[in-house]
Image 1 (cartoon, rainbow, N blue to C red):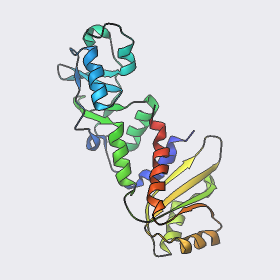
Image 2 (cartoon, one colour):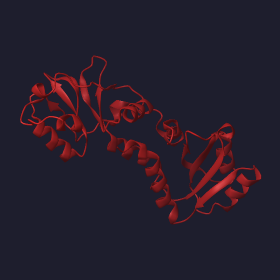
Image 3 (cartoon, helix red, strand yellow):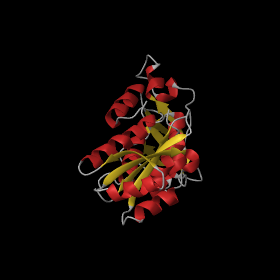
Image 4 (cartoon, rainbow, N blue to C red):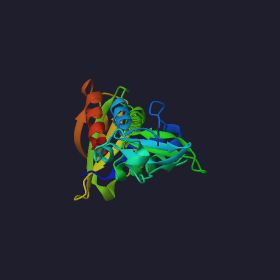
Length: 236
């Protein structure tokens, strides 16, 4: 299983992003008077498994598809279907790392956002976050991909960047993958040049293990595949 911490290297470009900047414009909240049937209809329409519920403008909880399906009378409103709802949320100034942790730990497709007075501001969808990460990951930029394998204690992004830049190249994006039962990790680099021969030779002089290289037209599709695999922990 991938460690959640391993995505941090991939996200260094968006370290200032906060929850309020990631709100979905497409997903509206439910009202406590809405029926179970409406909940399922909206979830199908917006392709999510959770939706926020408001009462008198206040956030009262998050309803899930599985919880609704546990009830037989879906014509009843949410007030009658549930005595209470779980109330996961983040404040509007919450860092993107903490948003990702909350979504991952609680297996959410939607995460409500409140201000300091706990007034509902909107929600963040998992698909919106994946779109944000895709943009920050430089998936559309031309270049090559280099995969390094090393012991976790040997990892130094500063040294890796110095090696790349010594060959008149730049790192467009990077991310790290590792497993729970290993001290080894892989560092995947998207570099702004397609011919990586000189970069590879320099890494090998510094005794780095170059595990994989993807150049020219195959680079973009392979990075997208690796990126989607990295975010696979969000799918449930």
